[in-house]
Length: 271
Image (tube, rainbow, N blue to C red):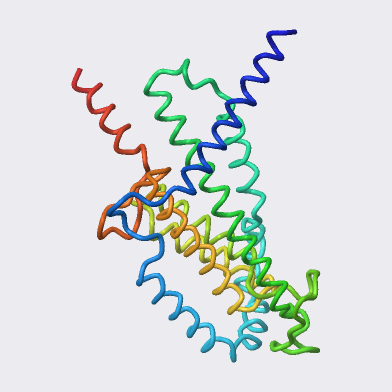
């Protein structure tokens, strides 16, 4: 019994120390010479997205009616719940909790590298999806746009700021924010599949229009928030050499431990 209590205390102590080390690293300044988390290109992208939303806004009602009633697309509505954040937050949190309590001192160097990679990326994915979702929910509450189901009664330009609830939480789309964050996370993890990953997550976000849960501008704004926030977070972590590394002139950070694992596997193959 005493041994179990000691093991539980040790696991809790390791978890606490891990959190403290993480917070210290987040508060620390970026390493000299590392690229900034937010770039001029990202600012330009945000401005272009803003003007795109302004140009698209007059067609929200027409596109919402047309796309939601277009027969060949009706089956895509079944894909819309892929954008629910809990599908990603719960596994990422569970993986992080399981790994944070491990006694890493008893692991081989190869396992420490692999577990460290999994833990860092699970933590990154959790916070990328969670924090971008929080930003979107704050924007929803402040803007208070009516859902497309009210388009025939209230119109596409009906707003009720600071009103909580589902009916006035259309802009931006929360599902689309999740898909933007997931698309960026997967694009960082699997750079060779970057384009199809982004297109696939965009399509899943697009299904929110077909399901008549959001207007096209809601989807565009939501996806952009999730995507840009996640890339900025990855670059922020890269500046502190946590989870990612970022070379000068590269927009996409690379995984922090990928180079070490590859080098170690190369050395083992030589033997």
